[in-house]
Image (cartoon, rainbow, N blue to C red; front, side):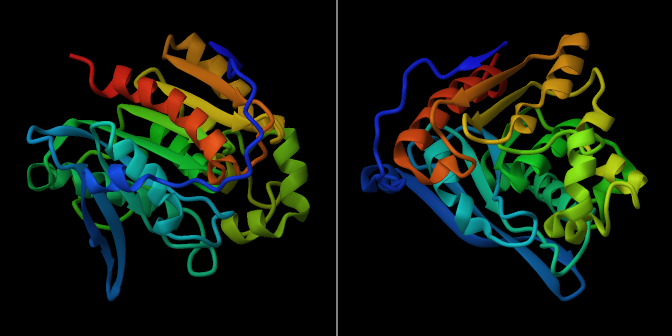
Length: 290
């Protein structure tokens, strides 16, 4: 399943804004600590619709920034918009490359999933229905969450050991899913952010690149995945090899390419809205199913 978003985007340079009426419908708990590494702690911002009293599906929201910059506030609007659609959402921090190399980043993402599942009753979450969405570096980490449940080297020790980090639906946006590709071998030879993230080039550290590659971990037990990317972004964000392998496993998957959009498409309202028009029905279908 693939294709372009049906309608051409209306030219609009306005930045993404979540309406006050939407925000007023949400409860929020900011700076909730979800992982501890000695004195180092990581926080998430949690959002939930006020009018919902039953246990809801949860969605972990993962910011981008080349694995080396950004924070949970950068994906807060995604979390708020999704919460308004009937989800408990958590926009999370994770350790960046200037502090720690891979696999610290995915350790933190998995710690966030385990925290929400372990504290499902406290936050009104259906522990059996947890998804993730992320953009750019966050898109890669979301995809890796999707395919690496049970991979011991990627679980980490951020807390709630023994609780599953498995997800039930994932939307990676503008992210890499095949670190062992020829394109990424070439990219890694000169890209400082890749070498800072993984400790060297693909040629130097093939085992590390393989461990970081969502494609390498995919199996028949993995959840549905829907890829969203901008038309002007690199074609490697289409995740063709990953989607082909998912087809072989008969796992639901898809691709939406947002017309005219660049790599950082979530910052503009018109593209943000098109993203939501794809992500919400996908999450509704996969996380709210009977």
